[in-house]
Image (cartoon, rainbow, N blue to C red; front, top):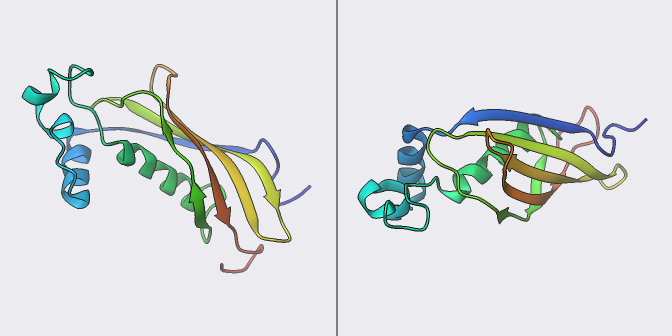
Length: 138
């Protein structure tokens, strides 16, 4: 049995709050009114404010960097497809599933998905990570 097994999973959940939206807008500089202006957002296709897509995607950084593959791993690449909006108050679960592990090269490829509290996929993609050899730093 290898260090990482095909099909191995990790996940965590958090609820997206008003504070998250405001802080992410300030940090990223993305003040698109669909995220921060209820009056503007009510006339969009969503009918209300939505979370920044990259705020949702940032949950993957926490998941991959802290859980699977974990501390010491470094992003090589990430594909992202946004499949549904995330609303303030949605509880999002980020999940990573091992698709491939190349131990000799220190590379792992994972399916990355985020779902809302209704089980709807809001983000999907794949990540490739560099992982340190067991017991070593990257």
